[in-house]
Amino acid sequence: MTSSEVIQPIDKSLLDACIHCGLCLPACPTYLATGREMESPRGRIYLLSQWNSGEQELSPRLGEHIESCLGCLGCVTACPSGVEYGSILNFARPYIAQQRPAAERAIMRFSFKHVLPNYSLLQIGGWFLRWWQFFRLGAVLKWLAVPSPAYEEAARQGGLINPARKLLYRLHEWEAFLPKIPRHSPLPRRSPTNSISESTPVQLFSGCIMDVFYNHVNHACFRLLQAQGRSVQVPAQNCCGALAMHAGETDIARQLAKQNITLLEKTEGPIAVTAAGCGAMLKEYGELLDHDPVWRERAIGLAKRFVDITEILAAGKFQTAPQPGVKESAGSDEQTPLAVAYHAACHLAHAQGVREAPESLLRQAAQDVGAASMHLIPLREAEHCCGSAGIYNLLNTQLSMKILERKMDFIEQTGASVVVTTNPGCMLQLEVGARDRGLKITVSHLCELLDSIYCTRS
Image (cartoon, rainbow, N blue to C red; front, side, top):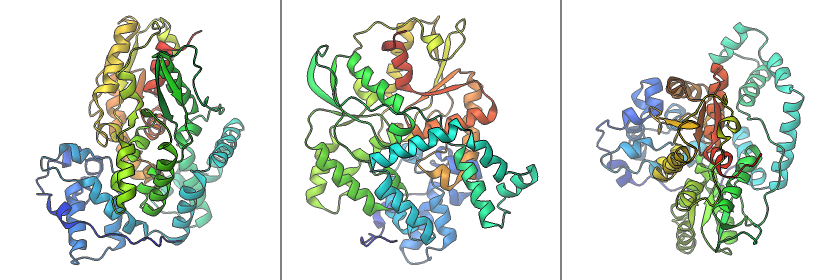
């Protein structure tokens, strides 16, 4: 299955903006993990420049270097020349997608086009995964996939030959990324009107994967907005298209974007997004639809209304008193103050430039509950990618886990009992890291922590 959409070549001016100074190298997680120039931003730009000018073919090897990029955009923050690396990557991704095996690409396109936008199918999938976990079928899969330590080592080194056994091992690897799937509870369509002090409604963008894997987080976001006296609505919406875009299936991403624009234009007020990855995608609709002047203007107009949930909460004030039981509710020993470290999601810090809002919310929460209940611990390289990056950890599992090792080293050094972030992919990844190391660390969305302080009643 392939796209009939015409793929545009890379704008040469974007590539020529890079002066190859190397200041991006310390900000690139794949370069830090591998030490290879071709796994760095300037190395990838050099390869793409060679291909764009016709000096090299887009060979599978060249494609691997590009596809190994996380798309975290840490290099954009570090770059003194203003290189628009994200735009370069977006131009290249559709070409990389064409190199995937036909069966793999067909499955991915079907998922992006027919599964993620279908809320009923997602709920069925969530129900299946809950029962899978209830009956501990992951242990059965591991027994089938990893019969011996020697076999597991061969699998890690890519030495398996039998396609069926390779598939079982891949499924085992993917299963490790599953969080504990909560029982799904539909969000209210709107908040009750009896305790609302602000009439302008806030529209809540709940996401697709976010609302299946972390449905409880969306409910926490809903309660937090209410706790600030805001009127909240959950409008008709669709998958934002971020995963399709990251995979290079740009035509599907554009189709989903147009559907969301049509649905969300009918609403009024700011649109609060609970997942940083979704927010970055939604705010980029104008660039995504740049080829169509009419849709581009509509996308730009709507993009002005998208705000991360932390932005809107930081701009308001909670009308409820903080809860003294924050230590116990967040999972730490009752005699020990909650030690909280903040991991900044790439798609919030680098893609959206939102840094102050989540940190100010954490500072205010720590102040409200007092030092005896909670204190904040700085995290080294807090804005470096954890290795999740959409479906990167599924497609590039080994490199993803190597990148995670560095992140977990710094998290372990903090001695934190809770690590908060703002993106479901980061939560999945960090939970795997904590579990693999046997660390007694709770990984949660920032809004879960705030909910336990400002909303939850015993």
